[in-house]
Image 1 (cartoon, rainbow, N blue to C red):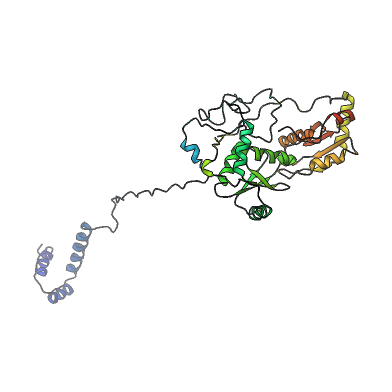
Image 2: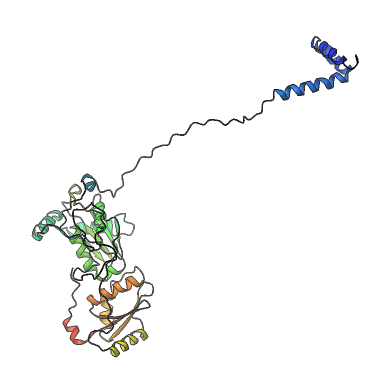
Length: 375
């Protein structure tokens, strides 16, 4: 038994020995070496400290940087200063499109209730009728023309016009507004005045159906914005603001918040064309479908010369066909309506994106005048 527990005595002795004597003792007693190793491992495991702590570190929440909101160029400072409802002194009825609607034709129905104003509830002092927001006060046209002439000032000289054209006629001009199938819309007036804050003129690029009647587009741009078209080249226009234009005294233009649904108008094409019998109308339609297309129109193209070409073709032909396969059904009917008023002619069929036009009888051509549609 003494031999078995002799290692206790040896360990006690090692605590009082010097390093040299301890190394000699370990070489003499292999049992002591194994015992020291066991005790060292047991002590190290009891005091073991892992390199990574299992406790989750409490991270400080990052402070969110507040981004400075930049003031947009298109903000209507005049409209923000005013309280609701907005009061505008513009001397015309507010419509979604001024150049693409005919005020003489009354709709027969609506696709949405007329009480829902596109300007928003309680934001305008005018009442929305479903197609327009008419003015409440009577308009003095003489006073309006006088105020417009005061803003325009003296007419520009040829050198000044040439300078404006050189600055704004190029395609890379930053002061450009695109005019599409909606024509001269109400919100476009707001864009024009926003450009006029920092530029004397605005470049307007017209595409689509409105290019059939560029005179109508120019008239409404000058009438609604009180500016002056100083340059016109096919579908490119330059609208000048005037010598005495003051951005701080610009008119208030309430913005439409959404596009109102188009009303329902009477049927464009009748089953039997006026002045023809049923058999004659059917024969005219078949002749038009089997004839060669006068021209092929593209979507959002430039249709400046379409009216002249149709008039020239009607000198030798009774029925014409226009290929509108890439235009779309809606634009196809709008083109037919404009050609009916501008040429003039009778659209007798819209089928498979094809427009069939009839010249009409001679007595009807004498009654019709080739004047543009009433503005």
